[in-house]
Image (tube, rainbow, N blue to C red; front, side, top):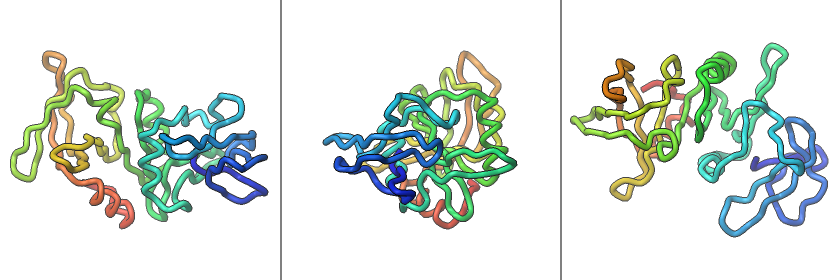
Length: 207
């Protein structure tokens, strides 16, 4: 996590901070302030207090750092339940997904958050995806896809990393789950990271 509570105020990680606590569970956390990773906090005892949140990757921390502090790690309360959204603006939630996730958990998050999008790490979840540009549309073939995404209802953006010196994402329009030879096919549109951040700030969730 990037933010913790010090005397009930949100603070960023700093090596001099002591007696800081998790905003979600109240457990004590410690600042991780190395030279490589973005400075962040971790529970003093290694556990995840929100069962929707595991140990965060560098990729998670880097994406969250693109947003202003008040939008990061916002606790959302609904029907006597609460969870920490990676990013929450006035209009939508953004969930960053670096590892595999069950179809049940995908459905639970989509129902709980409502207006939301997913940003997936293509380096970990879509290694075997081949893109073919066709004008403004990009078709793709995805070998051995994570079938848990078959029933998702919210827009997916796949972080494809740096290609041709630009950080690009694939906004998935449609995946055809008729598996053939271990592959599925689909189409989408390529957008830049900057354009996606603009869409989020404007509250735009669609394709």
